[in-house]
Length: 383
Image 1: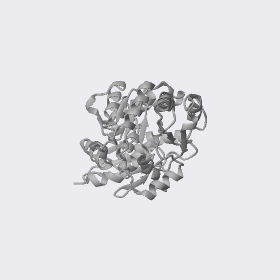
Image 2 (image 1 turned 180 degrees about the horizontal axis):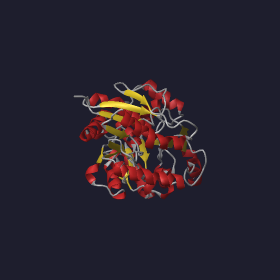
Image 3 (image 1 turned 60 degrees about the vertical axis):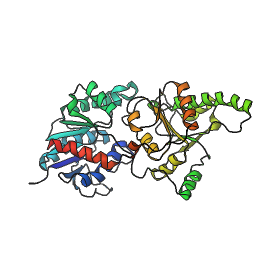
Image 4 (image 1 turned 90 degrees about the vertical axis):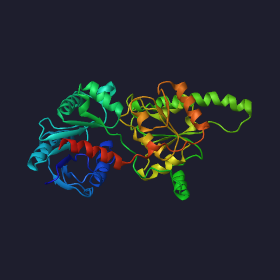
């Protein structure tokens, strides 16, 4: 008897700069190792320079000929080319690893909805075309036999906002990549410290700069802590002080309400001389960057999962993060705080730095093999 065939939508194959691309690549690497009962086929919109995943068959299902533009080409692939490939190849299961499943279901269909941010936050709803697409994928997700998501918090959002039966929505928590471990190679640590001009002791933020990331709240909380600490230093004669704040990641191209520039925020808060901006950080440098930090702070308002906090925790770095959405799930053992209470955020940062460096929480050792094993088990249920 032939194993059930799983045809995976590979639109994001080769796009490691996106969260959906990273998710697809990690699963593609690990799924054949944990589920020999299933046959995996990757459907691509075009031939890719990215190497084919080991243990997979790859097929190309191009969108219609002609210049469609990226958005229309993506829609055509999702709704026409990919389902046609499922029928042509007699797939038993269609698996779309991002929010974009077909309207006409070619077979039992599973879709991963990482989060509902476009529905939860008005600033992320976009213009008429983006809102129309959000409506479409909400409807198509509701038709799928199985919806996977990255956290229990997102699972509850999906059940409530899309009015779906709980048994059709399942959470499979993500994991930090296996390379995120405490860095101990002194030469590597020194190389990263020099490359990004890092101070000896610092607190770290690494992530995006759109408004939900709440970098503005972080900078204001940091400034509050600095203002409170300086009088204590003067009275006590201490020479130590609040460590610098390092903000890592590609800075916004424009200072807008949606992507406020943190350099302006630091200047307005009076801490421009204490905040260091690294710019873009290469993926291979991140384990050392996390390991060098005395504290990782991530006060995001909403996340589908929150991989940076999982990565920092896996590197053994103390974490302060939000008590909202999925973030308590992403970093067990982190100090949790209301991200909009800047006084509480400042106090949490001070508390975390004064405490002994914690041992890595057991759940911080979750791997992508665990994620793949649970994903394959849910897919197997559809066959």
